[in-house]
Length: 359
Ligand SMILES: C[S@@+](CC[C@H](N)C(=O)[O-])C[C@H]1O[C@@H](n2cnc3c(N)ncnc32)[C@H](O)[C@@H]1O
Image (cartoon, rainbow, N blue to C red; front, top):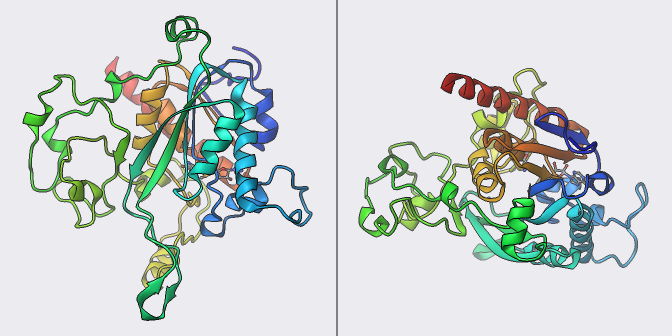
């Protein structure tokens, strides 16, 4: 394998991606799937603050005067995506999560870097908390965030699509691997079925650019009242993935130290719960592995290399390994690196165990 691509099936590099990405082997990556900073100072996290993201900022110095934070975010998005362009195969897809209010700047940054915008997927999770001030008289300053856009882009093709596919194996999406199955078990709640509307294709529905997640308290037999899948009714029409439950976030981290974290400060009860249940995976924005697996399946040729320059606690890596792909993750914050490694190692063992059981 070329020197800068992972020698093992997966690797997490502890580095700033703006420094590490230019060292990627040319045209070695099959798909880039990432959850980058949103530039909204999520939960007070320094790594999500637009001013801190300004790539022209000198570390240790105050923010340059007159830096418009949203322009700094767009410039950051342009810089990291430019830095990885040479490492991607022609026609390789890029999927990047975003916040509704900064997604346009991420999209512009990607376009300025040379990517072609292909679509905007919408992941409806319905579970966000409104980061708003509650004002007298029932007024506030924001809505409850119920969805996240996912910008889908592609590195320009090398010639025609057919040439690109035969020369590089990239450029198209694996539609059949992501079709939505008509399984009644996938449809908790009232037990409605939609076999008639499904009859269009025996192989399942063509995957849509709308993805749904169940509510936190949904069970296999019943959906909670605010569950997006319950609310949208037609439960078999779209792919859905549960939000990452605690056991999924923590799996593999049993040997790591535990800490009390409270992602959302929403009252005494949630504070008590956080105190009573310290966690090893302290990352505040863990993506569900099932959702990331769907993206890996859709965008990665079999056995291909998936890159995540903002690996966090390693959800993309776990998904890539479970889908039989290879993975290279980059993460700058030292505290998240062992968590990502422990989680991916865990899912790697699970995946090998499943292969052995099948053999
Ligand atoms: C939204 S989080 C990703 C969370 C991840 N999807 C998960 O499930 O755990 C973004 C991550 O990017 C990291 N990050 C921010 N700037 C970075 C940079 N310049 N280089 C590498 N990582 C960076 C942050 O530390 C953070 O962990």
